[in-house]
Length: 350
Image (tube, rainbow, N blue to C red):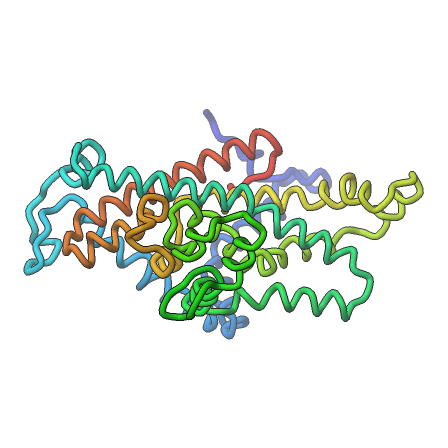
């Protein structure tokens, strides 16, 4: 295609000469001095970039450098040699886990199933709770009462996992932390929801109750803190929207349904996509502190499976393969959720 002078120049009708387009001059100047402008911006806001350094270091040392160890999934595990010097073993670890047909393979599939079920129940029951809490906080008229309720619901999030699991253990089971049945076990036994034998043995020693205890304690721990995002989105809604709904005769419930929820729908979709992305990434600390050999059938997840065979069993290649498959499935889930959300509501992460 031939390039003409008129593509870059403007004809001056008064003089009959061509001159350069002013907009093009600005664009050329920006491109020519791009890095100088970047340097000036960094020099102007250098304090913000200094504050960014710790986060970059955290991602470098705890997110990117450990990726090198993923090579252990495809190498013959050897405690003496580093990963780079080990022999290539192909997909042998993945075959052992997926189609090995041994007890080890059965344990992995059980752990993967438990991981999905615990995450799915957490998404089903735990995801709506912060939204409901934020709606309730918005309806409290007194600032003092609302602030008090918010602080009380935020506090469990700031407890360490060890403290939180110790409290759960003291409330529901017999053990070294308590003498006799916990308060929750006594209450459930008194109203007939559990038998005396189950209460005496301890709820955390019964695999049928582990998932319920895990989900209820998770909601108690994180629902209040997670409601901050939704409450911030709610208070950003224009008061004129409420006034228009009131003129149309909408009550409180109707305002929640037709004003508040549609206004925070984009926030809900974004949070749902991120939650689905971490659907299979259950933190092993809480499960590790709550489960035992009696509850492996419902409590053992991929992270604890990898911890048991990688650290305790000294089979790092097998543990790395298990975690890698778990993360790949999580990545596919977040891509699928983002694609569905983009097509259904035009709201997505990317």
